[in-house]
Length: 480
Ligand code: PLP
Image 1 (tube, rainbow, N blue to C red):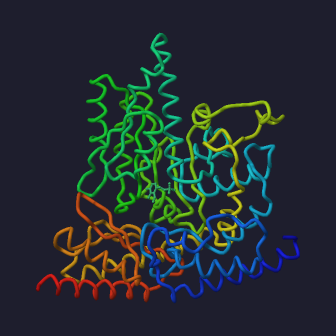
Image 2 (image 1 turned 30 degrees about the vertical axis):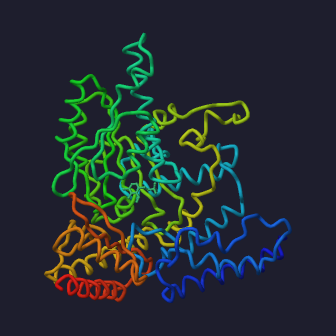
Image 3 (image 1 turned 60 degrees about the vertical axis):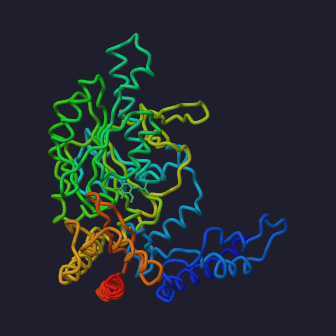
């Protein structure tokens, strides 16, 4: 394709995307296909000869779209939001067009420097302490964009592991490193995202999963008592992953209590995973949810969830960048440059070497909306979630199962898990609405999240009416 054809097809593609998003309501929110549906529609070999663009686009509509789950659909209330503002799409498109690979400052200075600046902007807006900001006088910390919250948790665990091993090797110089590794133990709540478990598997460390309280919040004493017990068994606590805004029910661990308890132990890294909720801390009235952040060694939130920015954009800050990079530095000659010592090289801040120009889309979003525009977007979703909560509370057959602080409402029919499983599966099969379940306090609950970028009251009322229709039908059937 030459630039002339790119101009033509690019305009058509923008038109296709606009039409897709403008007419989403006319489609089922979830596809009605079985596994393997696409194999029957697409040849098993790549074409040897080039194909016409128009033919490919026709296949998008006829073959791909029938298998798409429409995350931007106004009837999509599953998981958490997936940012997709036009400003972000265009920022990403520009990054793709520039096509640089910014693994070091020298590999593309603007790519590195914009990331550092934008992460400081966002860190300040969220209310992170100054030591997390790279450009603050005297600060040792800084921020970086990772692909996912899972990667942020992994990288923080790897840094904590390196720090703990270094300390243990100094204390026990004649002991095998593998023996010391076998002593390390990390902690999280039962409500933490499964990525903590995965990070522990990758890092070859033990993980103790702790019981939260009745509000799904992990408490300080629970953590310190477990750590004391483990120390008595000869284990070495080295890492605690807390969550602000759990995936299941948007619950908040008691960061302040945990932080204070950790002071009693030597060198335990405290990570805060706020993948969804962290974005909302840009609103002054929600900053109290961040209480205790001064104890944290690292923090992550995903603007690609709730800050209108496209996947992938997971922002991660550390208190001490040297402690992070010392776990990840490898330095072959071909990657060295003459500003090695003076500049940030993000290749040392994460797992991959190559990196896209991801800060561009976040920069476009932050500038186009301004912090005030983003605050309005977050507040709107919270208002809509509260509206949904009110609907649930008015119907005595249902109960609310979480403290609705942000955009997620957890609810269920009063009754057993089976009944709620049947309700959710009937709703999802209809394609009229999409929600997912979770298990909170060992109960099956249905999650309803305000997701669509421009969601309005009518969307919430429609969703509730749909749920009530299915519940009426189910309860009637159950009686016979
Ligand atoms: N942490 C929390 C609290 C989450 O809610 C999620 C996903 O929803 C994750 C981590 C995993 O996010 P990612 O897909 O960015 O790895």
